[in-house]
Length: 516
Image 1 (cartoon, rainbow, N blue to C red):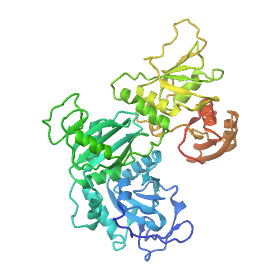
Image 2: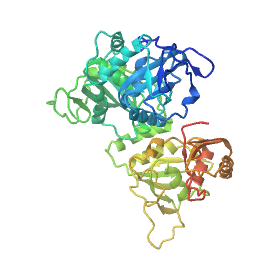
Image 3: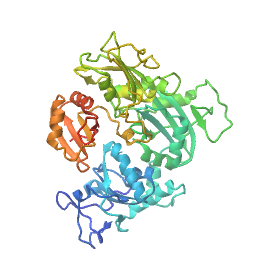
Image 4: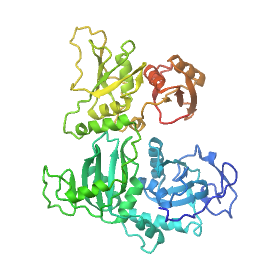
C-alpha cells in the first residue's frame, strides 16, 4: 500500500488544534489554501450535523488513499477524498448523506481500524469536498480505479494508481479466519459478502487450530485486494464473527466436491462427495506453510475465544445447544434470581432462573437460544461477582423446570418469560450493537433532566464502590460512569439497572467500551 500516492494535500500545522484548510463557502472545503480565509477548528466538528463528508483522525502515518477509501466502500459509493498526511487525518466524501450516516453509526458501535490502529470518524461540518485537481491528482486516480472495481467495471488500465493496487495483489486467493464466531458462518454467507467485490469462483472451508477458516478465490487479484482492504477487521454480525483476511500463498484452488464445505461455482456438475476430505494432500501441505494470518488474538478475552471454540459444534447445528447455562461458585449469601436475570440479561433475554435448592452456590439460567447462552458464557465466565469468581458452562438440561404448583421453593426459581426488561426482544434493536464485555465503565441512559452528576455519583457509591469518573453526553439524557473495578461495575449494574428515578424514568445501565 505504500506504493500509492504519498504526497497528496499535506496539511501544514498552524497551531495546536487547527487544520490548514480554507473554504470559499461555509458548505465546502478545499485543499487549495490560496482562495479563502476560513480556518476549520477540530472542535467545531465534534457536534456537527450529518453530512456526506466525514473527518477521519489518528490515521497511521504510512496509510494510503486506498485504505482510507476502503473504510467507506461497504456503505456506498465514495465520491472524493482529501488526505492530510502531516496531520494523520483525511476527509472522505460519500455519494449520499444516508450512506455517511450509516457508516458513522456502524463505526460508533465497532471501532474502525487501519493497519491495526484504531481511528476516529465523525461528521465534517462541510457538506461537500472540493479538492484542487493538481494537488489531488493521484488521489483521484486511486479513487477512479477503486470506484471502477466497485462498480463491476474495468478501471482505466493505464492509471499508475491501479497498477499500484494490482502490484499489491499477489494472488486471487484470500485466506479468511473468523474470530469470535458466536453465530454460524456458512459457505453461502461468505459468498454473499465477498461477491460484492467481484466474481467468487471457488470457496473451501475447514477448521484449523480450533478456528473456522476459509480459502476464497476471485476471478482477478484486484478483486481480492479490494475485498481484503474493505472487509479485514469487519464483523459479519454485530460485535462478533470478525473477519481476519490476508492473501494465501496458493494462486488456484482445486475443489473436488460441491457441498456445504467446498464449492466450485464454475463447475456445478461436481459430486457432493459426502464424508470425503475437502482438501487434497498437496493443498493441505501448502496450507500448513501458509500461516501468515495466525497471530492476533480476538478482541474479546481468551475465555471468549475458548468458549467460541468449545461451542462451535453446537452453533453449527450438529448437537442441541439448549440455551441453558450452569453458573457455579456464586456467593450464596447474596445471589438472587433477579440479580442473575439482570446481569445475564446484558447478553440475551434470560427466560428462567433457578438457584439450586441443595447447592445454593449454583444456578441454572435459561436464555432465549443457544447463541445468547454462548454469548453470555463467553463474557461472564471467570468474572468476579459478590467477591467470588463465577464459572459459567453450558448445561445438559434442555429447559429450566418451574416448581410444581403449590410447592414453596423459597423463591429460588423465577420465570422471567414475560418480563418487560428483556433487552433483545425487539428485532433489530440497537441493543444488539452495544454488547460489550464487563468493564469498569458503565453507560447510563434514560436519565431525567433534573438529576445531577452528584445525584448519580451518590446513587452508585451507595451500591458499594467508588465512582472514579463521570461524564454527561447527548445533552443530559446519557452518561458514562466509571467505577474503581469491574466487580464494582457488575454489582452496580445488577443493583441499579431499571432503578426508578422518579417521573416514570427507569435508569438503563449497560457496560461501555469507552473510558472516561
